[in-house]
Image (cartoon, rainbow over all chains, first blue to last red; front, side, top):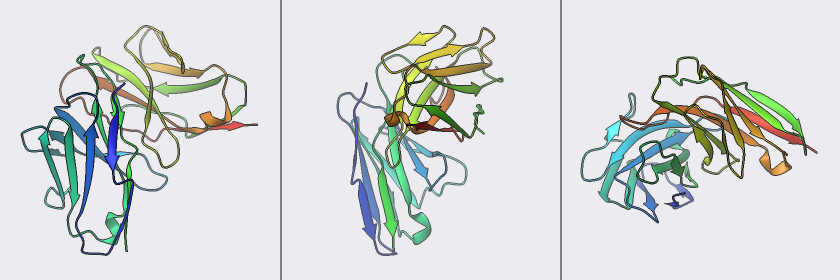
Length: 117
Length: 111
């Protein structure tokens, strides 16, 4: 299966700081990546679909100006949490689909735990 | 909304088979069933997927009912390391390819 790498794995920042999270596809070219957020003891919630070379598609209720997504290459998508506040503290996870077949499963990164003080 | 429903939690004795059910009564003809698990503080790990035939790999077996309205993930010999939250997801092989996660089943394997 695909190997997806996320960086950093853990970040602690002061309120008002902008934080960038990277998601890399290590062994294949990914035209589409997905970003999720997960609060403690809850399920994953899809935030947005990141498309290489075009604008991301955000899910309802997700502020696109708050969560900036850039997918400038076929192996890298970034999520920037702008002017982060304590309520943005969460576990952020990216994923992408492997292989050429349209039924291929998504593979997930190990997540980034963001804590805003 | 998620298209699947799963029991909130289950316990299984170590060494026994763990059978995790999933209901997806509104599944469409072109939608696959995917299973993942998530161990605390990690990203979800892919287990298996299928369309209508039963599937088996080195991790688990997937049994899909003939009407495709439900499925069961079977871990043949559960170990303590199988303790995790298990998610069942349905997704079409076309369109946006995005996953909508339900609440999953918290499986606890007991020694």
